[in-house]
Amino acid sequence: MKKEKGWTKIGNLEWSEDLGIMDWFTAEKICKEMGGRLPTKKELLYLFNNHFEEMKKMLKQNPGGYDYWSATTHSTDPEYAWGVGLRYEDTSYGNKTSSISYRVRCVR
Image 1 (cartoon, rainbow, N blue to C red):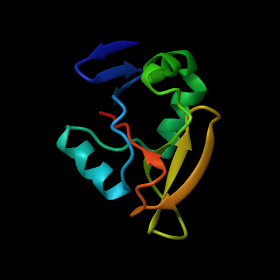
Image 2 (cartoon, rainbow, N blue to C red):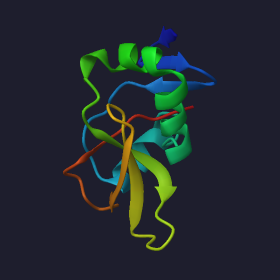
Image 3 (tube, rainbow, N blue to C red):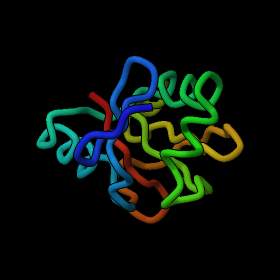
């Protein structure tokens, strides 16, 4: 695990620091402005399943009890996107305009 100016390299990706709670559209915009993007649902699950110890170190400022937005839109309703809980590997989906329950970490 390598840390560089707000980014932590785990596996083949660099993960941003926790950017807080926001809606999906704001998250997508901020990630792009930072030179990154929202991670896919698959990437978040890969982080949990294959880099658990590094992920726990990365989340030290936040114990990981939150769901994080993914770039993956729900297949039956494009107004929703998937989130992944990094504490228990649970998945859920939320309305992209909701800013009350999903946190953000970008990847590059």
